[in-house]
Image 1: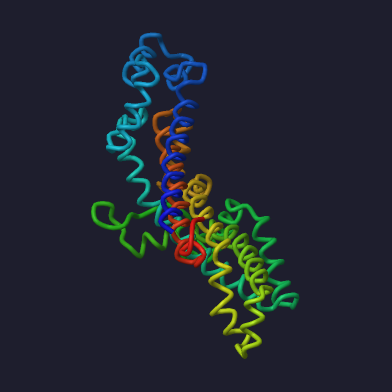
Image 2 (image 1 turned 180 degrees about the vertical axis):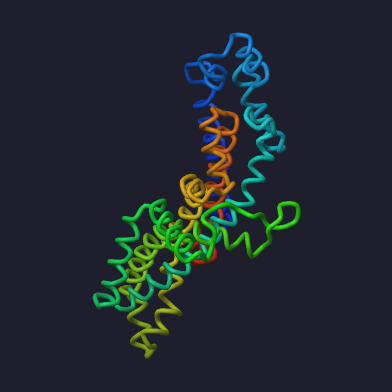
Length: 320
């Protein structure tokens, strides 16, 4: 197990290094003048030269890369061109919305998907199984932004149970409070969870059905265990391995894939920050947000690997 964790940690660090090189290369080493792109075609040569000096573009590429990485590691990032604020502060402020939104959406996804997937597997080829699979196929086909609009029309416009958009804050200097904040994130979380729950339910059903065909399950049934007891005591733990893989990917996608939904609900999160930075040609913000998202995906998958070591007994007996 120690060797397994060491390999995963080495892969984690190597992935971050490669990703940082790629992000830096795409935004700063491709042909063209980054400062000219950010200021637009009408910018004067003097303004372009001043922005180049401000961004450090007059230094060699390796020096710029090293300075960027050290700054990210220390939390001392460059200032955004649009906001004149360090990007670390902007990202930290927007994460106060995006992370709770992603966590709430992931919680709803897990609750719905595991319940429906296990229900469908326990009623294989019966009406319940067919109904869940049909509903999941519809859920996969529906775009999250379209479902978000439907939720706004029903719960905000017609029933007027919640507001159509905006975020009141978590309390303190922002105003609002815990319940108003969660209430404003409920509809966005549901719209994000629909597609993810549909996918995860199908994966859960397939994983459970595959494990139920194994010899040890038949042995457990032959010893007198009921179908329900066999399912909960023996099947689910082994079926969770592929499910955890998909859950890790989904949580990472929820963090990185909130751009459209946050704009539909006018939420001040990471997605809206990226959208505004692209519209304002603020490549400093785009670069740092993309790197943060890459790091988030890698970290989530690293923790999924740690869960493997807890769920899969084979990893405790030897290397993976």
